[in-house]
Length: 139
Image (cartoon, rainbow, N blue to C red):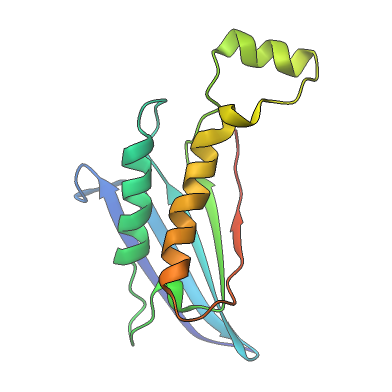
């Protein structure tokens, strides 16, 4: 049985004034656990890692479902969306690696790893350790 449904949005575009970037979340209780789904659109651009991380924090800290319920207070949290993290390689090199079916060097995925690090910092602050963070990355 689904109950206790609530939604919230956080605008992060143009200093929080425009909704072209940000997040929308829905939370609910199902059976005996709480679930939160967050869909986010973060800033694009190879050099905007700090802005993406800041927007992630603004969404995480700013989303309020009422009654003291925040993203980090749920048993299960699922993130999806357009995070805009990039593989840190020139286009030609990336295409060559794909064509040759070569595995991308781990250091090239560092920006994606940074998102996981930022998410982990938020989850560690929570008193409840039963979190599963699912990140759907479309690179």
